[in-house]
Image 1 (cartoon, rainbow, N blue to C red):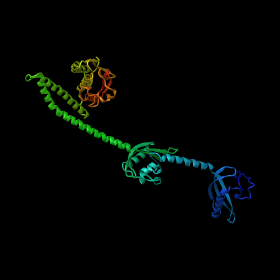
Image 2 (cartoon, helix red, strand yellow):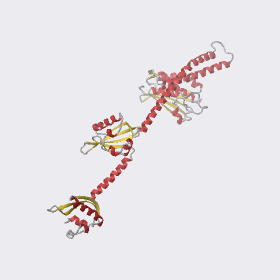
Image 3 (spheres, rainbow, N blue to C red):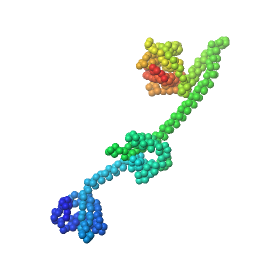
Image 4 (cartoon, rainbow, N blue to C red):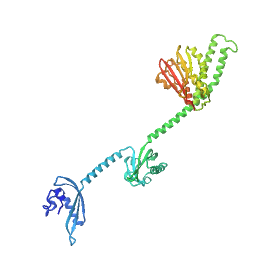
Length: 467
């Protein structure tokens, strides 16, 4: 007896098949497998199952699941074998697609440069990728079903951080990221940044933890190296500042003596000098000594600023009065150089809360620089105004100008705007460095704009409230 589906598959009439054996219509290539299955049914007197792929007489190749079971007579003997065959082609196609999908997923997972794992709600590994297993020298099969504590040698505080992060994921029901130092299989420590995330079922229940670990050892080592280099640089800079300050103090005493005696000689306080040359030499000694003393004072200032020992003494400063004072000091030098020095101040300019001596030094340094680099017949204009609640002082000259590529160097110690020593006036290049530092101490800004052959404009802005 056969059913309709059997007849359709084998393209036979159900009445015609009565009295025939299965070998009369089955494909010859599966004769042996069918015979073996039926032999086992008779021998074991139990149902025997088998899966096979068969091309039937209707031309269709099917994956089938065959169940053959014995039929017993009244005396207990096996008198027949019944067969149930189910078409499982769709299931097989689904299994194949699922297997291929898993293979693709696994290929991606195992080629990621990060460690990935999935653990159940009890903290037991459900999935581990190749990178993570390699890091810790444990085979994937030895990790599955185990907890971290059973297979990994996590040092403190990594163990504590792991437990805290998992509690936080449960509490927040959201991803948590943290950094940890862990021990690799080769004994080396490495730094990882770990992002843990919760996995929920359709009802919103937490069923697993996922984690992605990225090795950041190189980044951490680079940061540590940069930090060490910064500390060493700061120490070297501190040593340099201390050396310069010490040497400057040591130089001041003999310099003051040299200046005093040079002034006595040049002014002939204790009697006339024989010959004009002696007076000229004495004057040269005095001028050179003053220049050297100015340099020493600049070095002391920059050293104190770099060491954080420069203290501002703030008060209300009348900007117009201060500019007039600077005009008187620098005016003579500008006049001797054939340069016109002009000032413009807003009449309604309110007082500035700042260190008067420091602001005067800022302005005089800028003016001195402008006079150095402005040729005879040029002009220098100093202006002050109020802009957006801030005090703005501008010094504009018609000097030689500075190349744009060199502008950023001007506020660095011992830098100059011109590299040609024959075109650069004397100076150590500390003036604008000190100026920038003093402006910074007031919380202000210093902006330099310049065009070769046209001149330079330096703008200093002091905020309404300085720190």
